Length: 137
Picture 1 (tube, rainbow, N blue to C red):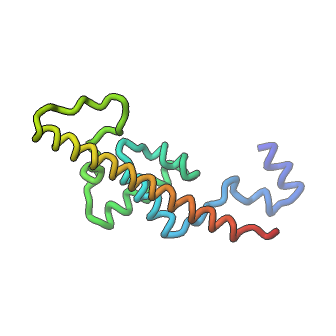
Picture 2 (cartoon, rainbow, N blue to C red; picture 1 turned 90 degrees about the vertical axis):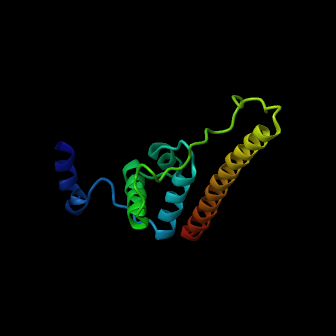
Picture 3 (cartoon, one colour; picture 1 turned 180 degrees about the vertical axis):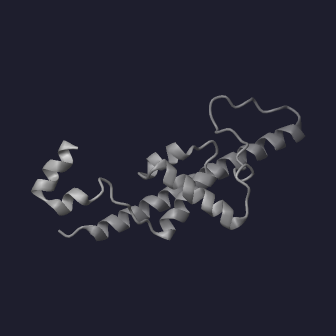
């Protein structure tokens, strides 16, 4: 309360402005953020939002709107049943059919990872391009 009184005395207009101005994100950025979230198995709103520098609730709202627009139920939208690749990979089976199934599953994991990395790269390129255009020096 004291802070607002002091600010009101210094600059009445500045005292009335909210502490955080609402940011206006482009539709392309929103779509990229949703695509990144949807293509990342095991991702949380918090982790993706932190990576992109946006609020978790904002990302959640974008994802829910996108799902509603596409007519996808919230629980069925994430199809990332595969766990991320890591040291815990089981050894390949000696049975040829089982080995093929395991390798196909691994390929699917790697393709999902590649899509995630490509999406992240594209977002970073667009952000760099945007911020390069913002400089006035």
